[in-house]
Image 1: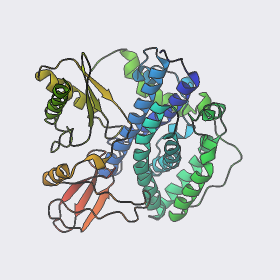
Image 2: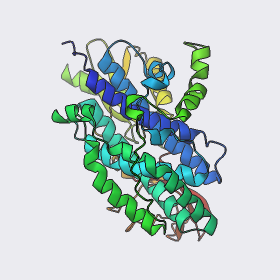
Image 3: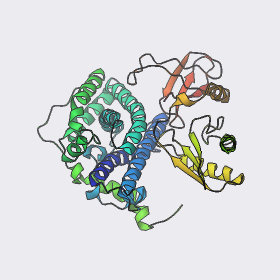
Image 4: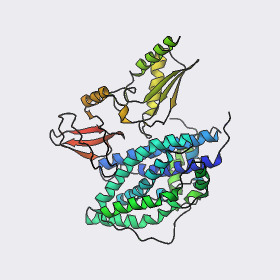
Length: 255
Length: 165
């Protein structure tokens, strides 16, 4: 009863995991630095959820691969080119508004994606998605409420939120680009075609942005993309170097 | 034989009931719904557990505790399996366990149909100390992912609410 190695499923699990890991790592950078204690705790908790989901997805990929590679090995010993996360999630934290806008964009996408993935015909993924979507709903509630608070807050918080929206908007289209891997896996009901989520995502995001008294950024013709093929912005390399340094300096260390 | 098996499953569950949740010591991992099943195989005992939250840092500790408690009872061939489906829900927490949470100072989860986004129709959370409904949420995330942080305007006490999940 040996499972045949299913490269597309492994690739798909890894990309979902990379999105969660990199976003979780970015959030963890706030630990001890957030503007107020409650937010320090909130972001650390959300980071834990993201990294926990990533761990389950990497483990599922490792099991499917069947070569004895662990989640840790996948995380600490791959190069930037092998990471397939969206460019959005690797963008630096910036100020608090920028972190919240980045989170808001992803959470609105993640809620829709993982909700659909609960019906994936690949059962390990469906199980993980069932847990993840419940957590993502809390994350989305947190980030969208902060969008409203910042946008409809003071003149300064409004200006910062608007600036972050304008700067990060160009990374949102990448979430919905047509993708051969998704198309192939969607035929068997394993994957969700992200482009089918775009209208609902746009509707929700528009609504919150408008409640927050912010303006929707102008659509740009140029789409920043490349994450899914391993072509990243300069920021990912710096993130990885920090995240991987201990594991690479002391391979197989136990603590 | 079957009778024997059932009684040993029950006795294993009794042993597992002595393990407190590391972050909410007022209730056991069985009451919290983390232990999903106990299965007797010919040469080992399998304990099926499910995580509360994906990022729960206590899962490893819970696994170690299960092994330790069963080892102390002379059961050394133990395997702990983690499952995700069905996803853990606070609806598995019994009324009895909810009362224990309240006595411990944690407002137990309240289930309701509410808009996950804008919190329309969110139930009022009663203060576990004075039962007042005059409470306000300070933060969606408390000391752990499973709890939110509230403040009671009546008795002026901060308290934690075990989020409905």
